[in-house]
Structure formats: C-alpha cells, structure tokens
View 1 (tube, helix red, strand yellow):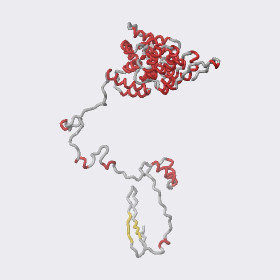
View 2 (cartoon, helix red, strand yellow):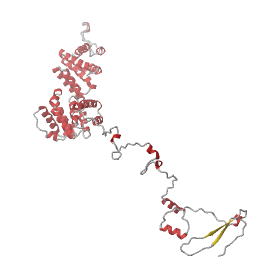
View 3 (spheres, helix red, strand yellow):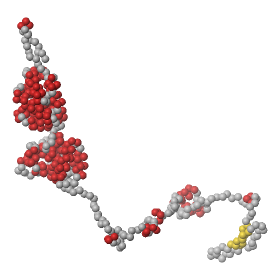
View 4 (cartoon, helix red, strand yellow):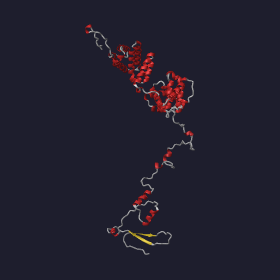
Length: 462
C-alpha cells in the first residue's frame, strides 16, 4: 500500500501503527500522519457538524437474558427507565460519603488501636486467664456484692410496726396503701402474723373498724397472704383467745364472726371450720361453734356480708331510740357510767346524741324521784366532761324538751316542776349554761280571785 502525503506547511506528527498479532498473520505497514491545522475563521465551516452526545454511564451489572438480547440486537444504549432499574440494583454506595474507617482507624475488630495507645496502656492486666496476669499487681481486693437485702423482722418487731400501720388504716381505709407497705417489709416467713395482729386489734375496736378489717383481709388475700397463711394466723388467734378474752369478754364470738366472714370471702377454706379438731378450751370451742352456726344458716354467704351490722348513720331512727332507752334503763339499774359510754359508742351516731339527752330528761320526769334525777345528772355530767356528748348536742336535747313540754305535760302532769328542778341541778353541776336555764319554760301557779268575781279561776300565767 502506498503512503498518502499532504503538503501543508504546519507541524506534522508522524505515527507508525503496528497492531499486535492476535493469532492471524496480518501485517499492516501504514504510516498515518496527523496534521494539526492552524485556527482560521473558515476551519469550523469546512468540518462536518456533529451533535455532541454524552453517553450515559452504564453500571457494570449482570443483565438478564432479555436485557442483554435487547442491547446486543439494537446496538443502542439502554433507555432512562431501564438505567434507573439498573441503578437501583447497583450495590455501590451513591450517598457520596467517604469510606473512612470508624474511630479514625483505631478501633474495631482485629485492629491494634491507635499509635499512642501503647504510651498510656496499663502494664497490669485484670483478666485472670491472661498469661501475664499477676495477683500482686492488684492492691485492692475486689468483692462481689449481691443485691442488698434487709434482715427478716422478728415477731415482736413486726407486731410493733404493723400495729401502727393498721391503726392508720382505721382512719384512712385505703387497703392498697396497706398492701404496698406490707410488701416492702421483710416478712417472708412471718406473713401469718398479719392475720394475728390485725384480728387481735379488731377485738377492741367498734363494728365499723371490724368491717374494715374483714375487707382488708379480703384485699390482702392473693397479694400478701395466701390461704395457708390465713389459716395459720387464725390458729394463733385461737391459741391466744384466753388472754384476749380478759380485755374483750366477747372475743370468742368476734373471732367466730371473723372466721365465718373469711370463709364467705373465699379467704379461708370451709374445711378449716368444719374439720377443726375437738378442743377442751372453752373459748376456742365457742369460737368454732359460732363460726359453724353462721355458716350453717340459710343463705349464709349473702348474710355474712352484714355480719358486723349496718353503719350507725344507716340504721333506722326507731332502732337507735330503742337502743338508747335500753342503755339508760341498764344504767339506772347498774349505775356503771363506763358501760353506758361503751354502748353509746357502739351505736356510732355522734350526730344523734341529743336523743340520749332528750330520753334521759323525759325518763327523769316520768320517774320523778331524787335518785333518778341524781343518777341522770351524774351520767350527763360525766359524758359532757369526757367529750362523749358535746355542748351543742346537750343544748339541742334540752331545747327539744322545752318545745315538746306542752305535749309531755298531758301524760306527766308534774312535768314543769320536775323539769325546772333538773335544769337547776344541771346549772349547779356545770353542764347547763345560765342562758339555757333562762329559756326553760315554767307554768304559773293557779290562783283564785276575790269573791266579787264569782270565784272564777284565772288562766295560768306563763
């Protein structure tokens, strides 16, 4: 082949191309001369115009058979939608972040750390399995401390603490607070003491507090105590019943009520009462007999909800009046003021104490004896001084008598005279104020006029 020469006065670079042999004995001896033309104004017009096209970068991905067939058959670059699909499959990061190692190359698995780590490294080792470990390097002895636990409370310590908790419960009545407090105490082996202490305290309380104790045992069941611990607690109460009866004469009856109520509340198994062994102790026998009697009644489970009676404010008025009349009659026969106060407190009606004052004054007017008036004066004075009956209740009771005296005098003709004498006794004793005595009604004495008036009787002067 002949060489082609162009006679142009510009700089010409000459290249001789010798392609490598790829198995075929083909030899090209062609000399190509590239001529750099000088920039002229007519040079761009002589060259053919080609539209510049920027070829899209195709990721180096393995295409599926249909994609490869489409590219090879057409010879065209992939469409933009196909490029997007191919880019989504690309696993190379496109976030633009630099791939620097974490922690500056000083950390990670299989690394030695940074260069300066050895300068500040501790020569001792704490690993006992390390061959370089030496026990002499550890000056301080290391102890393994378990979770802190408080020692178990003894029976005496728990009784002192629990007594304060239960006395506060009688005031606020929140069983949840009692359960949380008992849970925080260390009584793992003394949980049966909860039943013993709270039932022993309830023996000297009124019926409303006994009802609170029954509710508390029902709420503590399953959270603080179980059935076996409740049964063990009642066994301790029964064993101490002789000592408890010294302070509470009806302790056997009260304990029997508690056991029957616990059976009704599913806190105590019925077999505890029905299968209890025979005992020679009278108090224990009476308590078990009382519990069996309550459980053998018809509809006993429903009736035991009111085993402690209804609250004082919810009782009928006539029931309270009859109880107060019976209280006063027992006092006149025994003369025991303390027993009368105990019976009055059991009624739990401090807002109705004026009825006791009213019934006491009417009883004095009916009896009309010095002994009755003196005993009633002593009773009202003792209740007033001890704060059982307030001054307002006393005043209300006397004012009720003053307003009903016109009806009372129909049954008791001498009511005015007896009332005035009793008011004077009260003023002298100190529980009747002088202002109240002034309001006491008095009936004037009937008197006859002169004979000139015909002997007519004048109306009484008030």
